[in-house]
Length: 349
View 1 (spheres, rainbow, N blue to C red):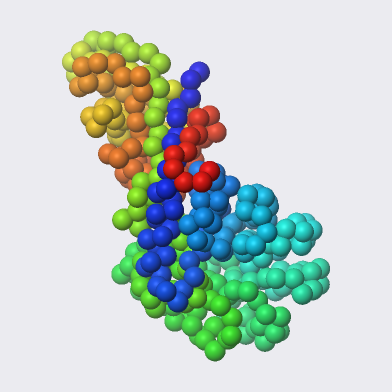
View 2: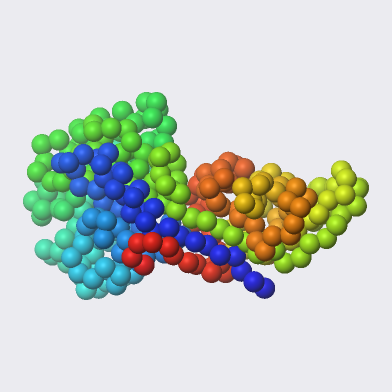
């Protein structure tokens, strides 16, 4: 079966980084998050593009992701591991000069015993209750940890995409209480925190989703376009149904196109009978349920049979599609499947 074409605009990724870098201010270093294979768009190509734009600090979730980014970038840039120093990671961390963000006393002990003198950072829990040392734990080990010269101390905001949430100010206060007076670079903000303003920037910002065209960075340039080939068309008579469980019936004669993609490719079943596909700016509604490999679309308004329809495009970005599915743009991007032909435009692939 023919696959769809996922086009990735590397110039847009670079422009989004530059815009967020400008928002961070002249005294703040802007890093880049390239975890989850560059939010599903290819960590190697994203990292090389971002390095060329000026990023020198990169953040990934696990040591294995760090290895892929190191292979793409070579020696020099810092690669921070949000998951810290896990059992079995020691050799990789050492050989590839990765910087684990130590999250617990167990991880501190593992790192200091296995790799004395090796680079590390510290992750603190300022109220998200996910990763990081809690205030009492940090108070017990902060003197020892700081004496070993961590490269970065960070925490993560839970509600930065909601600027009016009181949790933002609460976490900012907690982070300051845990770190003020320490002679160590600090980082609190991903994309949403960067948009909250200078109080949240500290020494390093680390945008992620905004680089790839997603909210909360509403001014981001769109990065992806996804075109799905039309396999077959058919005329459906009034009252006939389309797709599994007959969830849609034709109110009048309709021209229905079947396109090659489905939930196996990250097109969430939740958009059944809700979202549109587009051809030259004209919306064509999805009719019937999204199945594993196929989507049925009403193209009656077109007056012609197109070779392909776009599901991600200028008219419908990742967050628009996410809204139709009742989810977030992050899930749309990171769910995009392996069967698409991936093409890049612009930049440095």
